[in-house]
Image 1 (cartoon, rainbow, N blue to C red):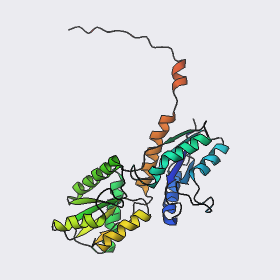
Image 2 (image 1 turned 90 degrees about the vertical axis):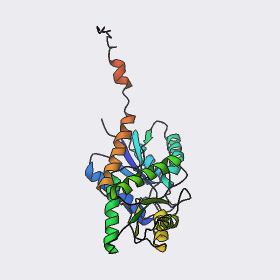
Image 3 (image 1 turned 180 degrees about the vertical axis):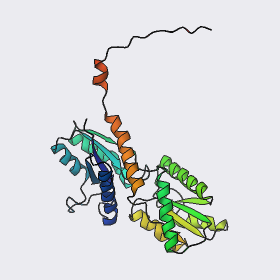
Length: 272
């Protein structure tokens, strides 16, 4: 049976660095699973850019012309909130309306996969080395955030795991108005007597939210701010896992079940 086509749904259609990360994740998936048909689509694809940052409907139209019948979308997001997740319901509705016979399903976003905390550690170690930081007594776990309570709770859980691993106090910070800003997080830690505070960035790419977080953190005295997670092996593996789980939901077993004879059921009496 042919696997469904995989479409990575990304933000950053108007941001060259963010779009490049999406393309790198696609390349990693193609290398890991050369049998898969992998594409990238953008929720914020700008008009006039052409095929380099195609919209979801553009990609879906292309797949349907190739007689593809099943598609799994994998949101390149680290939470249930953000540009990708916010735009997803409308995009799904439009694609299904345009192609009613297409079997289309959206997987869960990449985050908050705990395996990605290892990537966060590596990025922060790199930042500490570049800044020649030898002392650290507190952490800030920075993410996009949003109004989704469940998503923010999952981010807070990952922050607690990260803090527990390093045995350091950690405060979450958000790019949006769903919790403390980086400045507020750093002030909270300073009020506790912490002076050497580093920021771990729970972002995939150098998008606008990341740049805002990083700038505010540096302005308020963070000794180091990590780069985004990027398109490493763990990120690619997380995307593949999300695809596989969603693809299973597309498998229709009803015809197979209908052809099987009904099982003979027996009652067994178990003696005392």
